[in-house]
Image (cartoon, rainbow, N blue to C red; front, side, top):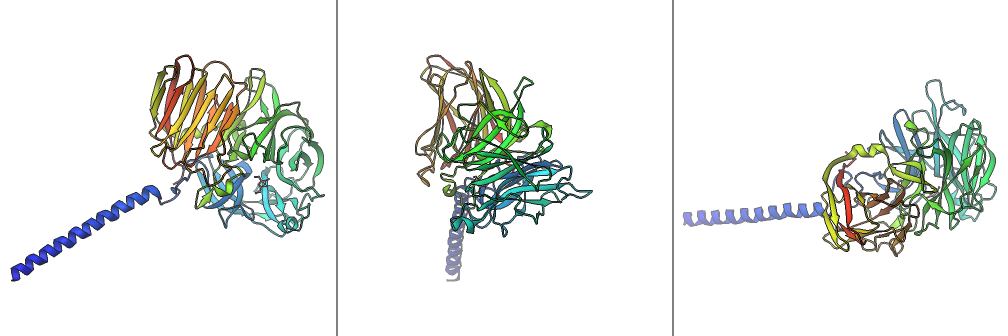
Length: 527
Ligand code: FRU
């Protein structure tokens, strides 16, 4: 009897152990599955960019106040700390030594009695023209647009004015100027996004301001008193939407001593592939007036997700450093991320290049990007017969830099995953066009405007001979650079799984040679 009870007890013990082991096993398995679907931890949520800047949480749009000082790049940005959709604007803040690894800082500028804090710029007032600085500390001065929500809702037109604030601890704490606004409004509905820089030609501060359909240029000796000196653009450039986020800077044409001035103007809507886009003008600036005889419209990026980009003041090594908001007002509020919304492009250097008879503004990842690129896999030369294809397995498909040269005029490249999602890029040098198709790239139905059709980029100045292709894949973006930034397409994508292969199809009559094919892992920048 005792023996039977003992053996029954043993059986029960074994049964319970098996059950508990089984449930333990199940637990572990469940965790692994959940981990894959919804990873947890710092900066690892679904679609979280691993090497592009995103705010820790909540809504972000335009980069603001880009200024370099004391070894650090400051990135301020349009930020709404209470929601993942646009709302009352603040300036968020982060700093970086190389523009790849960022350190988050407290919110810099809060709305006040004059209104919300819209886009703008920042300068280091080295000569203390404003009087805000002290003997030991140069003032960082932010120049921004005040947006008076009540005024707008009341149907007024003068609800945007310009204000300034200063910081004596490199952007950690701010004091608003008591004389704000420094530029009032005389009835222009869209009057915003001041970009200020030190103007060597006129020995003055210069402010670029957009006023609906044109640019205004204002000068000031001290950042407080401003005088309008010229206008540009009523009759020039694309006008499918309101002009926003201007920038103006000199660049030397590569390989020459010729200097041209470049004006950036973002417009929304009215971009060639729909919604928001950034056009540029090449011309001259005499210290007061910008002129350009450019007739055709030129765009810095023909993808759909590079908007409101501007450049750094005081960047080292004479580099013209650009960063853009990697989204589009057509669907920015709807993208399928939970905790935060949207990312910035990788930092890019802007250069001017003469190609055939044309001068193009090129944008290509900053040199510091390369120090975050890890091992290469593999490096090879491939030959593909006409009409045939080659499937290249990707090792780091979610977080990689893929680079190669294409020898023939026409080729199609597409990424595919096991889920059947795909992104296709078709280079047709006969027709001089690149087509980017993200219609089946994964989650696309969060907005009808995300992928209503394919995107097209004209490449009129593409030279004969091999072309260089570079693609940067992160968890929710694909940036395509042709010939070192001569033509660029930046696009968000939301695949259901990572891409594990790149297929290259030869659409030409000759054998396709792919040289120096490499896939590099790009390191995650968040600790
Ligand atoms: C551009 C823009 C700016 C404005 C800001 C508001 O995306 O519309 O013109 O200052 O966003 O958040």
